Length: 112
Length: 116
Image (cartoon, rainbow over all chains, first blue to last red):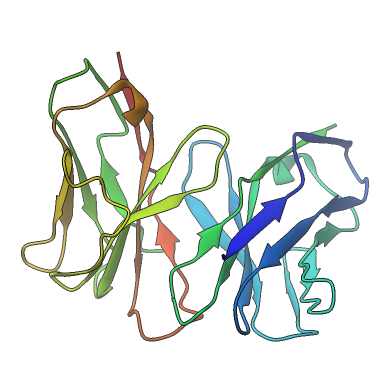
């Protein structure tokens, strides 16, 4: 079936450290892939997306590349800030459904 | 920037009581979604509306949950009777239409339900 698997959290980093949050998926057809972010006390917001293989989504210094050969969409940022502390959700739409399937979320904590 | 409005922000109730959540999507958004997010998990779709019609309610526990969007604008999700396992964050989201696979969803801040 369709699913999204994310690395367990929390991920704890110091400010300016490099971030990677792993995400792999199983899907039929050619899914679109997304990263959503949920800041404390707020709803989910779309962070970035990629709609076909080898596409790179980017926003606010975050990047993720759609890797069909490894069915992955890992989230990266070169230098994290305290304000990046949030929960990050990987998601996809596939199989003709327009409704995103979400992963469990990965909590990121950035210390000054 | 326009937002999806939800109320109440928090709700505490006893099991077997009835609860209701309200959502007002972004003006002009035809599609509305209710998601449930259990602590430590990702959101799971409960029901999807296109205007006033239900598109998908296959994951809605219909013995106790109901949802309506009578005029195709705001929506109410009800649980009766509430059970301990219903404790979760209930998220509402909206999008312009359901026709685009890459349609961006806009989420509200959610209603945190605690059933005692």
